[in-house]
Image 1 (cartoon, rainbow, N blue to C red):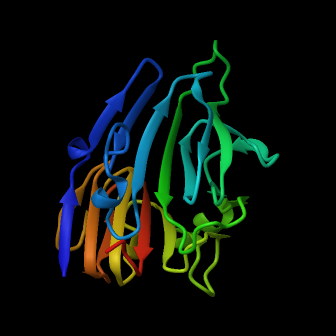
Image 2 (cartoon, one colour):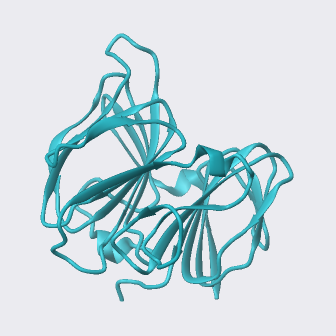
Length: 240
C-alpha cells in the first residue's frame, strides 16, 4: 500500500505561444506514455489555451479521451460529425477506436479575453479496434450536492458517460470549506486538486494542482480547506 504526493510544481511543464501545459505524466515530446502511466492513466494534462487558439485537426487511435473544462469554453469538432461547446460541469468522452480526427479550440474569439483551462485525460480501451464514438453529459446538478459523483465509467452499474474500459471510473466532487469525501478503494488511484485546497488523510495539505497516487489502498478522507474541486480516478487494472 503506497501513497505518493506529487506537488503541482513537480509536474512536467511544456508551453508555446498559446498553450501552457502542466502534465502529471510527461506527454509532450518523445515519452513512453505506457511506461510513465499509473494504473491505466497515461495522460493527465491541465492546459491553459489562449483565446482563439487550439489544436488543429489531428488523429487518435485506440484511446479513451476524457475532457473536463475548469474555466472557459472548449469548441470540439471531429471526423464522425460531432461538434459542440464544452463548458464547466459537462464531461466529454471520445473513444478513438479504429481512428478519429478532431479539433479542440478555445471558443473565445481572437480578440476575447476568456481563458480556457481544461483537464484532458487518456486511458486505453480494454479492447482495441472499437468503432469510434462520442458522448457527453451535464453533471452540474449532481455536483451541487457536495458529494463524490461518478462522471465517467466502464465499470458495470456505475453512473456517468460510458468509457471503453471496464476497469476504470472517473469521479469529481465540488466541495465547500469543511466538506469531505472518501477516496474509493482500488488497486490504483489518482487524486487531483483541480481547484482550491484540501487536506488528505495521512498526507496533509494539498494545493491546487497537487496530486496523490495510490496503490492498493483507499478509504482516505479528503477535506476541503477552501472551496475545492477534486478529481479521482479509480482503476482496477494496469498495463503490467
